[in-house]
Length: 129
Image 1 (cartoon, helix red, strand yellow):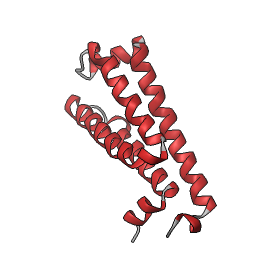
Image 2 (tube, one colour):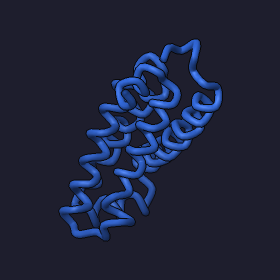
Image 3 (cartoon, helix red, strand yellow):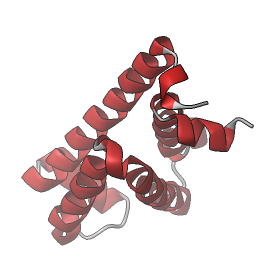
Image 4 (cartoon, helix red, strand yellow):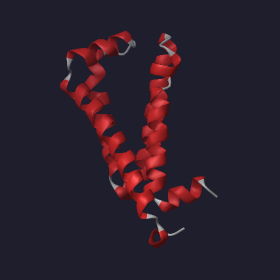
């Protein structure tokens, strides 16, 4: 399927899903960059040094922006998948509840890839034969 035959409905659903993911991740990055108390407390509970909040926030901000830009969206999605995989590993390590905490990054990753596939026919064709 090429871009000319792209369904406008798929395109808009993909943009909305991607927009929700982008908004959530930017909010998360902003909390880390602003070093707000609940974020720092959560990092401590997860065994992460609070001194790494800015570094993690910048990393998340950069790769989220990459995902938001159509020309770099696929690379951004790959990098975000790695980031979210690390979040799953951290939640597993500390024994957080499976469905609400540990798998939450997986849910975000699913929305991320479905959103990208619906707005990018090349990605969609890669997943749906």
